Length: 217
Length: 261
Image (tube, rainbow over all chains, first blue to last red; front, side, top):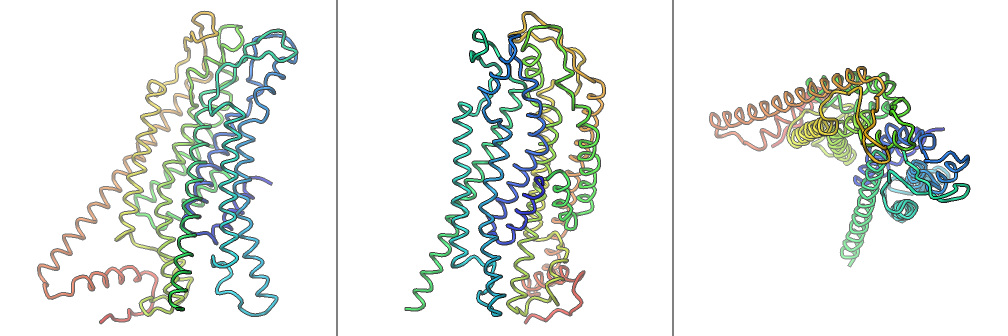
């Protein structure tokens, strides 16, 4: 089980997406997943070993690291990628359900099971709203957990068993900050793409409905 | 998910590239991505562990390392490769869009579509003409811009392309000016120069491809203008469209073109 599973999942989703949806998949693959695997993972690999406090008191370093990094940036990033990709499964399941129904009834019930209309349109819209929601929630979580998107060089720690306020130094803070900003930028781009796709679908189908109503009248 | 996936994505673009574009892709895969993965990552693997400062002051090493290497060479190269490969996706998307339109026409039973079946559309190779020419040229332009920007960023961040053996650091909490020693500086310099050289070759290939496309474009235009001059009674737009379509389908279609009136 690895990121290849997510990649295969998203490739399947691509088939039932609009043009903007395909751009979203490309952005997630290349600018988020690939950057995470090829670059970000290795930066945070030894974060605990390289976290150094100016003290010999046993346990102080461990406690301070845990205090300042309740969940590591890189794990939060991975969770975000998984949560943000999963709503697309709703669309895949719905299409599979449609195909199954056609097979059961042995007749063509839909113009095309993968065509975004009717119930599938609602599912697609819900998946877009969920994706956007997850993106926003994770961005807020990052902001709240780490007091903004900065990674300081030095943090002052006075948690027991540290005897006094102790200086602790984070490894590679600048590099981590650059990649954190990159994460935020791609997250915002994905939010914009999702919102554009949402507006596009709503406009397209309301125009279609109006035209239908007009021709019927 | 790794560089192999990027290779699969870009491999699809290869079919619709010019010869210079294919050479560029080969250079990218073999001399940049492969070298990065099999060699460069090992050289930089222990960079912080073996970065040693002549002090026992806790935190000094971390701070000095961060001061001299705001972003590691390896990560910068990885980002450069990702950004430089991405414009090719514009071409892949344009080709996919064209295929989608042709499939739609085929399904409608449009007479203008001359394909026997969907498989032919799927395997058809598009010539770089019309709107696809603009997309392709834009993608090369963006590639050039990204390459140049990253090379400049490298030069700016590391004061040239050499990796020194010794760095003098006086960032707090280091008590005084402290000597810090970089691990494997010569090997890192060799690989840096290699990657910069290959980057320059890629820039030259992109410039050559751009010139080739522009030359082709102007030659085609002057040919068209020449034809119009000598044969003013030609039905211009329809005929040129017809000629373009003929060129487009000549490789893959066996049918004769249904004539336009």
